[in-house]
Length: 609
Image (cartoon, rainbow, N blue to C red; front, side, top):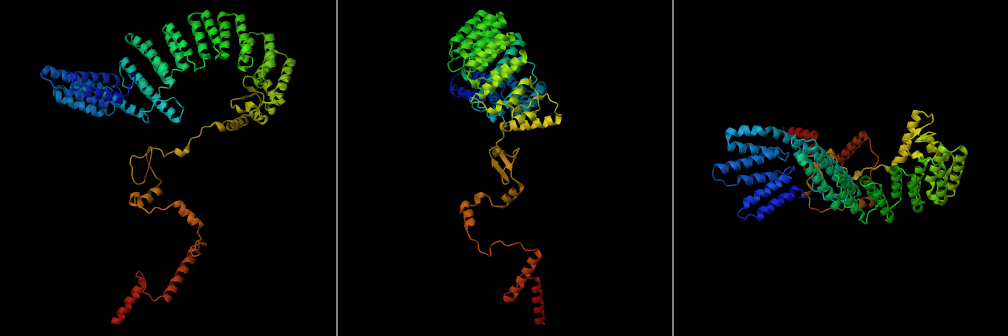
């Protein structure tokens, strides 16, 4: 039921036919199997043969009496109507079969019945052509494996997304919202057969059902919502059981349906996994508890997180800011930050978050105390960001003397750091940092590059100096080429083939995986003149040895190449050689010598007379 693969369902129908053929109610069982199959995969583009087998099965039923014959005809007509309203491969042939069926059933009613569905058929035929064009290049039988980020995966997912977007546009122009949702969900299921490890496809499918349940008919609201929950359950249980992203989306979905117990169970289930980093899970779990049960429940979650040795500093930051923003208690937030500082005093990220909080509270003295306290204990190789933040703080709230004092301390700390590049400690670079503000730089990009400032690698700088636009653009282009040349992904040209393979094959075509491609005109002409390879059975020459023999052999002087002669001299030399041959040889003249032939004929005539 979860694997909507057309070949698998055809195999199921064949299995029923082979195993139930000896039963007295075989036709009943077989019809149930066909109805079951076309209900689930009958909208597949490649289900034409399944429909054809179903209709042939209906036609093969023996009937007696007019009522039974009418029932049989109605069943066949209903099946044909379902076919012509569905975009299928080779739908034209199915339409011709339907027209023949109507002509044979009742010529009087044939035109009326055909005209009733002809417009639907036109829409389906157009949609079939669009679908075939939209899915060209799609590999439907790809094995579902964890994503590797290859070019082929990205291209295939792009085609799948085009197919899904095409289904969402309602190309069949159906007025049934239920049928539209069914077709879109079927497209998602087909994609998941090949990419069940792609969280994006799972989420989009569940989100589509969720939105359909919120805006659709009351009749299907609950059903579509349950199907969305089942999709989330499948994704988080089988393919992506360790994906926090889908677990969070699933929990939010259950929370939106006011099913708080199920949402909480999702967070707890994810926290029970030993091979994940639980900090983000605790952060989201804490936010969920605050929304649904209040601040006290969120504090209990924070207590659980502190007891987990795998948690990192982010949980302390989240808990402290939650207390400050929700309970409006600065004292509790301060205690949580201090509690985290005992454990993460050497973590620049945590220290900077704590400093930002204090600076927002306008507690300048406490902020300076924290700066001095942290910089005194933190390893020197981790202090650069904290020193930069200290300089920025003094630039904003302190006087010039305090700013210069902090800069002097920073320079001394950076010079004493053995892992720091000495060139980055120059006074000019520190001066640029002092006067920079929100992307504004007190010099041009060219000057930054000359000074080897770290910001020179950024292309989106806004120079505050009066450099001309042309110079700024050229400098920006140079910086971009320098910084990005090593990060450009270049194609593997060794596998490139000519565009668009030819429909024909044979002599003059290059047969490679992907099609037959035309050869260059000179090579194609040569191949057309020489015999095909199957005409030559040997002996085969070792080309490497032949070339080596030619290179290492001493050629005779008569075969050695000489300087080229002018055409006139060559002709005279050839004429001189001919005359020498004539004087030295007594053989008969060449047969193609017209002058000598005429002389001999004239001499023969004179002698005869």
